[in-house]
Each structure stands twice: as C-alpha cells, then as structure tokens.
Image (cartoon, rainbow, N blue to C red; front, side, top):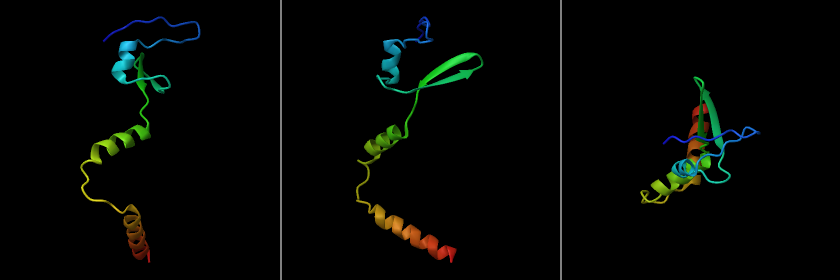
Length: 85
C-alpha cells in the first residue's frame, strides 16, 4: 500500500486511515521513527503491556492446572540461598 501526504508547516503528516487501521493505530498510539539509508520508517511502538496481554489471552486457556507463583518464587529463593552458602 502506497499513499502520499504533504508535510505541514509544523512538520506534521497525517497517516492515512487505511494504513492506521492495518497497523492497529488508534488515537494516542505512540510511534517510532527510524531513519535508514535516507528512508523514514514509521512504526507503532510496541509496549511490554501489549505483549503481556497477548500472551495472557493466548496461553491462559492452555494452562490446565493452577500455579502457586508465590511458592515457586520462595522455593527458588531457598535454592539460591543454599547454593550461595
């Protein structure tokens, strides 16, 4: 998909709606600008929260047993303390 836009007096460019939709960009989405070989690359910035939400939704259904995270952490700490002594 190729679209053209004009840079305004403040250096602003409107990203075409079709491209925003295709990239899942909504008002408030942060974008990253990269300059590579005299080409400007604009990408939606991926946040850690987005990955966490994706993996939670994707893999939560696949976990069949409950996990006691506190117990796992406590056991790990005990093992590390025992090793360091």
